[in-house]
Length: 92
Image 1: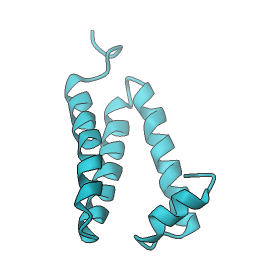
Image 2: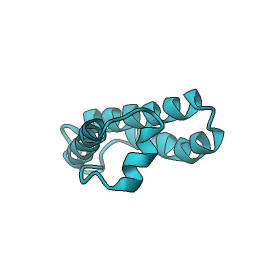
Image 3: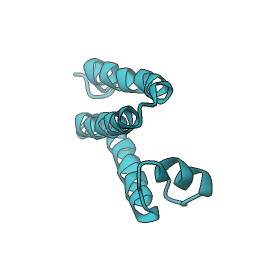
Image 4: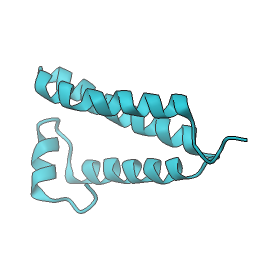
């Protein structure tokens, strides 16, 4: 997303994202994945990741693209399961 490849830009173009918007969305996604690695910020990283996946699901629903919603749902539920299970190194 950060590199701004044409395929990514055309995918986000149907939701009226500019190149800058796609890059910012990519930075937020990378930031959340870095936060997930650390036990202290694990929950925040997963909440940000779940929120970004939920945003993509909502954008698919606005365009009535149910196939896109079905593709994104397992990732969203996996993120919720990971939040429930908590960080493996953070347990005492």
